[in-house]
Image (tube, rainbow, N blue to C red):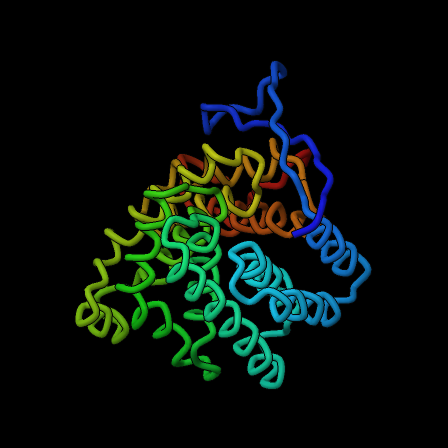
Length: 289
């Protein structure tokens, strides 16, 4: 792919519970001309054009690992603009995810050691499993039915090059697979080898904490970590991480504020302040009140 430019990013700290240190080191990430062009199209809201651009680049060089990974990365970014509640968008979204998965599968077949393609493949597979059915009642079956394959690819990716995005995707994947014993989804999950509810939440916490080590400033990951602790029944850690997400983290991207809002709402509804720790709806956990 073409020439590119570079930018410096802050290396994450080793302690997941502490804010980034002031003594920082930087590393350089190089962006190719194609990636810069794609990013500019996305920034201006030209998402269909960015997808067409990536497909055209792949058509020009269909066997190159960088163009295959480029298409997969573009699929990840473009499918986020779809409204999952609308059936036409759902169909279009699955088409994009399927094309991205085909590109990463081809890349892994031609270049087995290419960790970037495995990385994108796992993220695309998790999203495709979540959207396998449009009917709301059947939607939880997607991660359960595809559990073994996603788990295998996830382990392969983590063995090659663990990234915060993959760890976060796998953490959310395990949380969505966690079903109580009295739900029919749990018995279907038993057939497909899905761990019980406690085991799923423990794995989710493990992956989210790993993602926290790799990217300490990701609000979404911390909010999901707190949610996994709550699902496990560890309310002390759930409250700790919800508070950390709401009070100590700074939104990094435009839509990060919703994760702070989710943490705030969870603290209000799950942990109202009352005498001796009892549930007292008359005393809300509102800051500065």
